[in-house]
Length: 288
Image 1: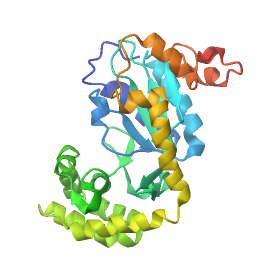
Image 2: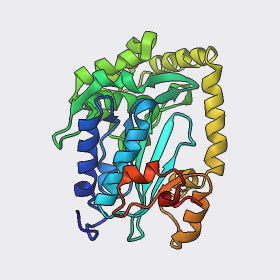
Image 3: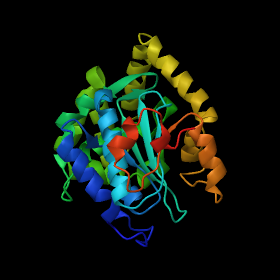
């Protein structure tokens, strides 16, 4: 068990055992991006896995939280295509959050599903599976580095280290371009311009137009986006994630009571996580 006085700026020794265990247990699970922001205490672990593995991933997360001496574990399934797992920091800091994505949208249409990412995977030197750097950079180019209308977002490009990631792994970048379908050539032209310190707005507009056109054929995806906007305002956990940057209130008891009204909450003490999850009356889960 890792001592609870590990500085919040370095949570690596707490997080890595979970990532290694999930890698060993689920060949279809992987980390979507470099997890350093979570390791330093300010971010989350963004991962992907198909929905059929979510229950087991939740159980593993609960067991890990208990082993690490963390507080209550919250399971939030309210965001479409996402499972948010949260373990409270008993010292009152930002909580530990693992997000599991099954499907990613881009401009209202399906960009990729979890299994589509497996050809882009590699093993991190620390012993867990993650998307390779060039692929991560290309995905961040469209998600973080591009504004509507194909315009560049210099701040997103800088903060997300988009150029550095793409430059480090050309093969990964080319593999990820396959996720763009018929606009794969356009996204590579845009990426090459970005690497050269320029910007190919025409190429990025072509990518945008293709996904907007696909959205017309996927009304369900549009409904997913609308639903997410609604639940994001109503769900206590999602409010804390997106509005409060994963920082629960100082008086956590009332907040946790509100969370329990419509979330699964497991007391991550020495109780075996699987037994707690399977407890039929919910008493071991802290659910009224």
